[in-house]
Image (cartoon, rainbow, N blue to C red; front, side, top):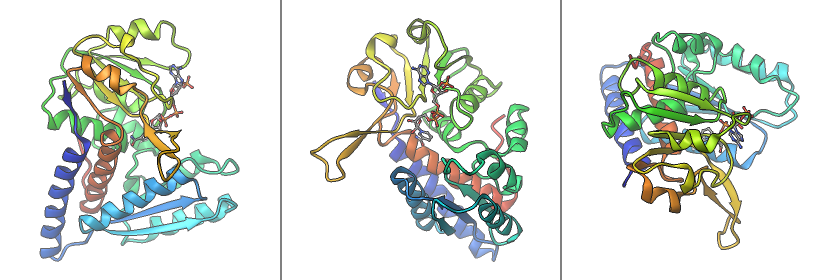
Amino acid sequence: MQILDGKLVSQATKDLLAKKVTELKALGKKTPHLAAILVGNDGASETYVASKVKSCAEIGYNSTLLRFDAQISEKHLLDNIQMLNENADIDGILVQLPLPKHINEELVINTIDPSKDVDGFHPMNVGKMVSGLPTFIPATPYGIMLMLEHYNIDTKGKHAVVIGRSHIVGTPMSILLSRNAQPGNCTVTLCHSQTKNLKELCLQADIVVAAIGRPNYVTADMVKDGAIVIDVGINRIEDSSKKSGFRLVGDVKFDEVAPKCSYITPVPGGVGLMTIAALLKNTYNAAIGEKEHLN
Ligand code: NDP
């Protein structure tokens, strides 16, 4: 069993980007600039945004964090996105989700200029991704593809079972894995809460991607020997031994599943770090006017 080490791979990606930014700066070109919008005080969202902003600084990007309280009106939020769209110094815009209930998430995503949509959630970019055109690929599935690529894992002809069909993880993951590319060329089964025989399907999988949001949901009896397991889940569970009062666990019961796997991602230290690396890659591409193209 080999651990797919998000720390190692994300650092390699960040080192490469830092080098490229130094080159850009030496040529007198624009420094990539990411703008992040955070609405409210959700603890997990605060942590995610803070690490994105910190990672920008680490590799020499500029970043701007706009914080609004949870009561912000939808109009005020949209006006601010519009301002960022029109600001030529900003290359990438991300709005940390979820947003408070009174704000229409779809409208917010649709307002972001597609050429600055480094999260890849705008319908125009989703359409391009589905069509196999160069575009911004949503950071979490993109990060997973970078991880598979880094470890040179041959995915061709493998049966991938993706559990979870969200627009930000499961659905784009299923599209990328089924592409005619490496990594890709998988036969994909996309599962969700209405799927019957989830366990039987998982047992047939050469690759399991768990993006469910339920702690320790995937157990050893659901995974066949030698499978590759990608755990996307980030779940907080109470732990009084921790200062914070909680610890993070994935959607996969790591201790019992890992011994059966050929490869597995840990939580923390796996997909989460790759998500940030992929976002930074998208931001670099936005700054130089290129889109990643996995085909
Ligand atoms: P969502 O809640 O949007 O989607 C969860 C998906 O899981 C849904 O499609 C849902 O089905 C499905 N599901 C729920 N219960 C079951 C079940 N019992 N059996 C089968 N399918 C089920 O979550 P996200 O996709 O946003 O996130 C998933 C997890 O990944 C979370 O833990 C989240 O924190 C984490 N995450 C991690 C990231 C990272 O960087 N590592 C980034 C983004 C998310 P249905 O559609 O039918 O409701």
